[in-house]
Image (cartoon, rainbow, N blue to C red; front, side, top):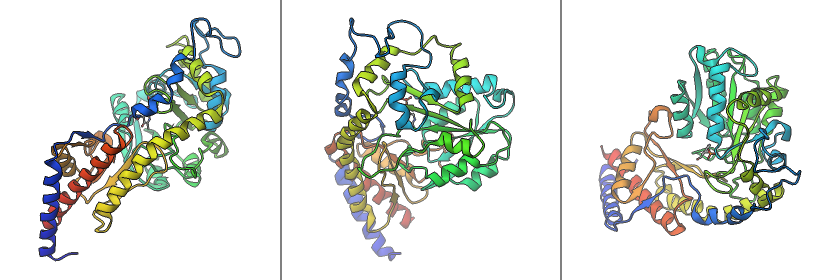
Length: 418
Ligand code: PLP
């Protein structure tokens, strides 16, 4: 630890650097986990892939008409190997996987699941929320009346002992998980941890892994982990219906105008079909056909994602370099170095994340509010900041990261001298 006089000169330096940055009058935003326009351009051909006289699937289906609740088989066959699920246990739906999540949870609350027909909503119902996590998972579950229980994560996934302890309560119905390049840490659940999750004893017979594989093909590096076959891992562990798999092309083609996916054990897919059949006659097959034509096969998706990586990886690298240059030597913070996905997590000293976010906002760098990564918006250690580098230009990302570093330095020295 530096002597107080050193610390106070560091604080002076940090304060001057912050003022200098703030005086530039910038307006930068690294809050949004959205694709940049150049990423959306990559899918431009999608918009013209179906026309008024060319609307039939390879199998001859007229996509303009009702029907086909499961979604187009040709599309499911492209994504099934990528998601490591059988095509006949994969449903292709509408434009948002969050809708599938909402529907699956609502059906469970109203009607019970494929494993246990007692409706979750009849008694207390709780979900495990590994943190830091995805805010929309938390707000969705909260809005449906679930109590949210926080569990910690390490770099292999959720801490099993804690999950298992909480799952002794029969009201605990499941756990959110983003298995690949998690939002917001970027960590990937290891096979060993997934096996433990698949096998974990739980009081609720229909304890469910809400396996949201939103970033399953979003690799930034040539060398990358592969998706886990979670359905087989659960089946091998004697819980064939434990995982509900969600995914979408929101961050592959056009955000909010892509295709969503749901997969599960054989009984779960039948359960989903039976429930879905009452709320829809079928998905938007025209959009699904566009995606079939655009990708052709799984290799087409992988080739497309390599083009995304060319745009996104330099932005991640710019943030990581700025953090290392500005904070590394003095170890003022820690951060994740994801190999894919959309986010980097910065862990500051305890108690200053909200101060950093406030300083950044006043200096023209918009950051995700502190706490957003935790259930009920409450980060008890007040030290987690989510960085989303994809949407701004590379120049803007570099500047925003410099500004963020200036704020962390200032807030850290303020705290050290407090
Ligand atoms: N799941 C995760 C983990 C996400 O980060 C996001 C978007 O940021 C979504 C789901 C949203 O997916 P969709 O657009 O398919 O609803």
